[in-house]
Length: 74
Image 1 (cartoon, rainbow, N blue to C red):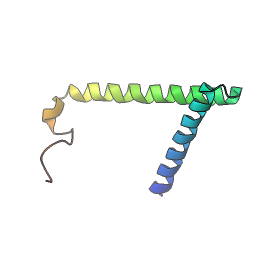
Image 2: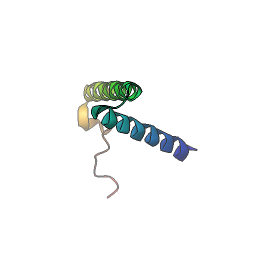
Image 3: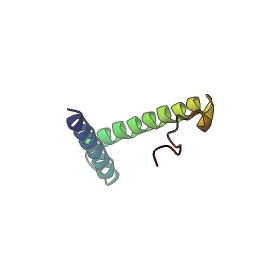
Image 4: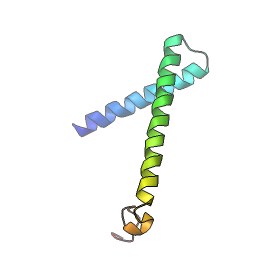
């Protein structure tokens, strides 16, 4: 079930990317709307990710061990 959901998410992202490229080449009005929605969604996701990084850095940074970059599992 998780693979199906991930596949759908990848297809939606690919369709959004295609809409952005098509709109940049002067596509129809609905494509420009989809491209705008895709761009806004990407900006919101980037903003949330940035705020999460900033918030996690306030709790001890990389020394807290939550960054997953230790030398365990070699």
